[in-house]
Image (tube, rainbow, N blue to C red; front, side, top):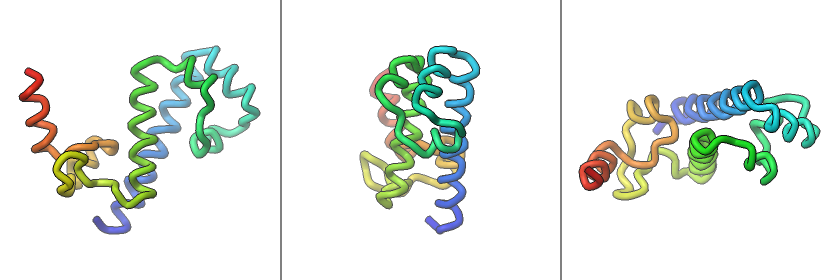
Length: 118
């Protein structure tokens, strides 16, 4: 993958992370209080820092799962593993990553996995 695409996907992931955190702060007073207790003044700072255990306790299950997926994708970016299927190690298509920036599997492996579950 080219550097420009990787850079764009990093920004998409960071924006997604910040969006999740903004939504949580807007909808959940406990989350807002936990963030304020951390001394964070700017969501950008929070989005670039790890969230402590106390903060994670107040996050809804679905939001936590999505946030975890975004965080994992950011780690894969840093480790040059972004866009590599976790099952077959082939490249995940750029179109799939644009649709699901935190995708872990290529479309073939994901489809096979879903077929086995049904």
